[in-house]
Length: 215
Image (cartoon, rainbow, N blue to C red; front, side):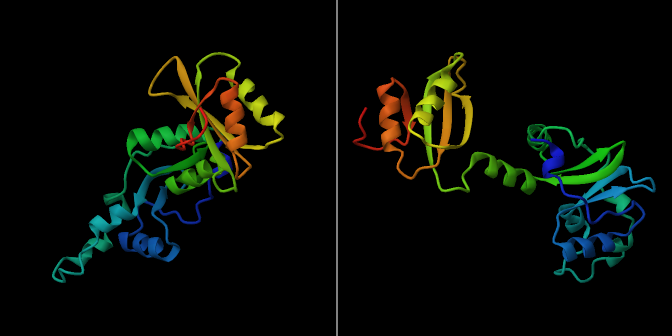
């Protein structure tokens, strides 16, 4: 899935010379957590988070604090330079960026101009959709050898039972290079007959792990 499929067009953006109090008002008005900061050519020069503004905002518990700080330019508290992505990047790239850099938002640029924004919430929502968990379904996890042809063999067993697969993904078993876990989300509320058949074909089903289930 590409970035352009999950990004939203930024309805709010500010310039470095706008005031902190303006950013605070917009964050509250639109219930957002990030505002891209752009120059006169709509090129991203910074990003402002609600945390940046909160840290700069005087506490209501200390009325004697200098409220003039809200009159400072955004440039004094924004983060710069900014990590950006392209609309044709993959969403996996964004997940990696969020993790590696411990951030929760990236502006999307094309020809060096702001065209969108992707937040951690956008990404998580799409990942939930990709897993198929939002549909009525059951999850089965199967430990298999890491070799060519295993996945189509497993999915054929599911298909032969006329059962639809909502999603499928594969990940290493305990960081092993020789074994994988195939996770299937299937459109049935009773996966037991399929589990039995998978076991009859020699596959090790590790979830659901129900006491008394036939081995």
